[in-house]
Image (tube, rainbow over all chains, first blue to last red; front, side, top):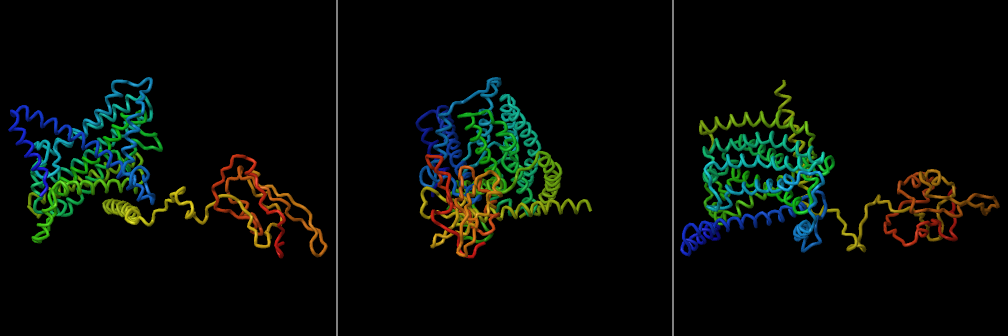
Length: 358
Length: 158
């Protein structure tokens, strides 16, 4: 059976035979860096194409269909175009911050990749405070966005960045509470233990209605956190041209664009890990043969399938719902999501203490 | 009561969002709904919408007869002087003098396809046609005379 665990173990054994442990570790680091950069580039191409295809189908259009069979090379061609374009810097921009901002945003996305379990025993860094690490790092991306908005010396950029700041700061709360419900149920912040706790059923099924509510809250909050429609008023095309990245062009714009999609992937991966069991296959009670067949599907495919299902859900939101006004956005968070998630957390705590979950 | 309103608010909001998602989900899962026409490729089988407005035409029947009485209602209705009706006097079968259309001059380059002339026409002599390939190299070719040479008004139209 195909498994990524086997490949990593074999590679490590081979490196330890050939080199001394320090050099082997260094080589492993290089391999991991290369792999994550490759994953980033690949995800950027795939997700942008997926977004365009999903948008087209939902709007009863065909979408990109000229470059390559079914338009699958469209995003590669777009990337090539962006690489060759000139990266303009506005006259009165703060050049240092202007150039730094896309890298900050990108770096945050890269750091978030570390604790995600892509398959069984296939994880870059199984840190024991994984969930805390994720929520701490993911709120850093607002610094990059504010930096970009401030350094551009453009009123639209600044407005977009300010809106984005208000949005991320407030929605971080309900995303945090939604994540906390799972932490309360599992009793651990470590990603591998959270996944292991879902061996006999995903939390979405095991945790009754409160976990389903937490899941819905999580999806809403992360949609807002990644600045996507219906919460995309940080870059609202019709009001602010493009928000914080109005002045960016060429490869720096591409980095912002890439970071947006990588962030979507990461929040969906975390959502899949917490609520849908990460790489755990779907098991139903005592259907032994059914469970056995499910075990044959590699864990990496389970993880990717769940993640892409959540990504599709978020894309579905984007192309269905109209954009919120900024006061509606903050109303939704402070008057609806936050009270509901606080009450929900209390409910889950009671369930966890009394042991009412399956 | 406050709590009831609050819960009702949440319920109504969520259900209306789900209604929208059901519609878009239906479109996503039913590719046959796609309305895109791949125009230059399917030029022969192109299917345009029924109400597509491309230019004003005057339908003629097999006897080269049209329904235009030369009343100039279309010329009056036109907001930007696209249509100019040139009339003439004609002697009909009973020996009476009668006004008839000599040339209905239509200038496509001025037309905004607003459809007001078609609405104004009392005898349904003109209508909108779904032609859109109007590109020419010479601007004068866009000025058209809609009634065909030698055509006359159909019997029984006043």
